[in-house]
Image (tube, rainbow, N blue to C red):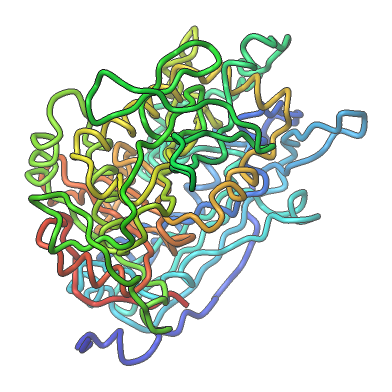
Length: 529
């Protein structure tokens, strides 16, 4: 692949000019802020890292960012605290709101921003250096700043604002509420959505065994065994939970779970216990043979060189018209999010040419503020998200109609929202290490996890010199992760941008696939460093 961009000739040099601790403009309440289980579960996760690119910024832009951030931190003072642990059992974590401050880094880079714009702000290896990457593990959990900002000036006056934050403090909606508020403070305004810090609203004062039992952690779905017996689902201990039964729905099988509910045919980590239908004894998926006949052919597993296995960072644009096509293909009743997820899952599964009985997964997040009783305000500052993953086989995901796969995503999101209280009871009863549990459950299983939402107000962050030219992930955290952003200001309403990381061989297959609707912002693939 030829590279003509000057950015491809050499890695740009990012130079740190200044590093300081910023405090709120005036002292803020000194308090111990209670952390609900929905916050604590993220303590072992890396910091979220996002980049906002601005063009034609004034020379005073960095100073203006510092002053306005100090103003905004008066309202968002939990950022200035540190995670702490109670001395008395059970040693629960809390936020010590002590005005320790946030990190602010000033940097410069020796390239003009217009070269990024000409390339569609495609992912670049040096993006990783435009944002700090605090280590929250071990003792650093208690000492690391909970928010780190890096302002990097480009040679033509452009500016990148890198944001790294602890997920313990804020979920996506809370983060972007804060960023919009920071922009408002920079423009001389007060935050239009003042944050609500009463996290005790999510405290579980009494635990219900009934509620706890409504949420289950399905680790594995087994396909047809060597004896030809129907599929079974196993829990973490390997015990059989249920067996498949014949369904009146034709091509789909259902199982009866312990609570008597009939379930569809995909495994999830949620109250549903679900199983794959049987698949034929063929080995490899081949796109050229599938689109019309949906048949699977026998073949050899694709062999890849070391180069094809290297992860590449990439940005795709999905136009509003293509989203409408996907929704029309899936039929009524699905959101844009659900059909986009289903489309990615199917096309990347085909691109992998995986053995049809190999496992594949798809992880989703759900904002549950509106599904608590009473509902939480959109201004609530903290985490109110639930998550889980669907587990199926490559053969099934590749050949099912889009409506079926979108249905899996739809049902999973709906269950996450409806069962948020059961999820919280489960966390308080069984501990808050579920993020690591999910990592272990998905180890070795190819698939996707979604780490953002196109509904966030990422392009409404205006510090006084206009809306961002682009918003990106500093570096997609792992293979198959999907980071969704709404389309840029000049785009049509409903456009979606997707940052992802996939092996080079898979990415090349997607770019050649006429049925893969997202289009690259450029055709240059960037190797992950």
